[in-house]
Length: 419
Image (cartoon, rainbow, N blue to C red; front, side, top):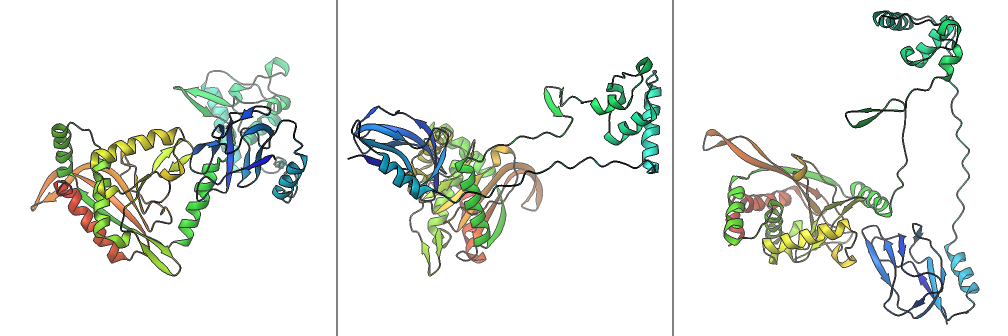
């Protein structure tokens, strides 16, 4: 009997998927475990394998098309099997109300300036244009009507070729004039008239918009910003790399420090529910990674029990596979806290929107060299600003402040991370 293959739910937030690529075509034989297609979800692009054997009899979604979860994408069965009834039933379930037809928007007609409108601004503009032309060493012949029309439209008369007697610019020359759309200046294309293009929203971009809007407008955010001294961490990192012969980043050290701070302040490592606050004793640390379509948050599971080199290896692997959309659902779900670092872009400080269902997210800025006061004297030092965004329903101000106090001890005395 033929089997209907529906759009799978490949992540907990997935509502629709885009068929990125088919590996089989109608008429091909399919074995259990064969990769049928690649499906783009709201978080990643994943391979979708078959749990059935037979012949691919029907494809319901073409490459590049998007469909809701559970809608038909394919049918697998015996060669020559009649599947018309399955197609009809599946299509009837997935039908939606047609969208109302929108009336075409008419372009507004250009506003005509009455002959009696002879304002000082127009007079100044006309005088300026005439003076500029005279200053260039050549006189431009133009009819009064054409000059008036040129001023209204902002036309550069020096670029218009006259077709009247003796090369005079007349009305039709202004009406027919079309300026160059783009000018190339120092290898930059600069538009000289209104121009735009549409960039279709990907499944990931639509999901990001929906989830962050829900987070911002359902969770009462508040922000705590601190500035830590980084000189000890800079020295610690150099010594760690030299003695252990393992390259780690500042982000790896901060991630480990955050994980340990969450163990000591578990109320920040929480989730809000209507009838309870769920406090996690384990730390699954989400690390925001920028990709072409937006942002994904792979998760370092049990981050507090991993050393900095393990965190470094895992984050690098996540970043590489995130760019190629090869992360699995298990790797991007289950975070209990999230960090987002824009320091590598030179951003001194910023605030993030909480990655629900987490109750907090930490924004990490760049290391800045600046004058600081140390032991009553002004010296040159290095500092970093961090901002903790909290969901006030689950994390009070004092709770968030105690977490940052613990984090300060680890970051300004990073040797304590190893103890």
